[in-house]
Image (cartoon, rainbow, N blue to C red; front, side, top):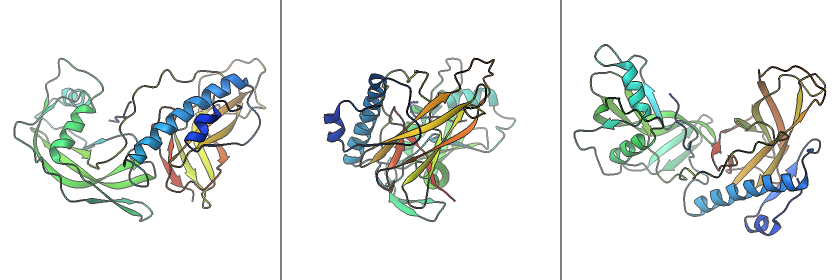
Length: 304
């Protein structure tokens, strides 16, 4: 059960300079007007400025940045002593209670370890704080649900998705009454806060689909972004080609995908396919974070 934290020509050159941004584009030119592209760049600049401010305040940076799920279900079957349907809905609503006090002291620092063996020391939050975070992650209210009762908490590690790919991460594992299912809550402190709503998504037809993941080559200079797009290239009916543009700061990168549709009229289905586009950065990606236009992090792994 996934829970997500939620959830053209340059204008505003002064703002770009203030956060140290560089723009690079690969492929053909978008058909959008300069005003349309400038507005898109403005949104990217705002997202980068907010991320840079978080990093300057000590959050994120070269350490662990969670992408996607903050709570994992351990076990496949809720068992005969609990209503599994209610349990899932209660969890998704953040309806959890702890009749007994949970440890409020933060443990010693822990280690995050990525698949390539890289490690990073991180602060670890208390079980009490992790329980509060797990409740706050509820996204689907359920007024008729019976809350899940937490019976204990154990510090462990679990695999979570990060801005640098899958990582083994400190987590508090919460036991639940009447079931062997447990909930693992990511327990790394000092991460960027979930950003507030920044307005409706970009809906111009010339803007391509959102980036879902990416990889970086061995030089650190080329990002290959992945997304769901048209199954066929632009020379086919209903097909499309894609180009990518990178807007960069010292701490993060935003990649915008542009869609170039076949202009010939045709009957097209809504079926999508995995597509990719490449963009060359102005400097190596390094320990920066790939983010979207709402300042949400996107996972980047090293290309094999």
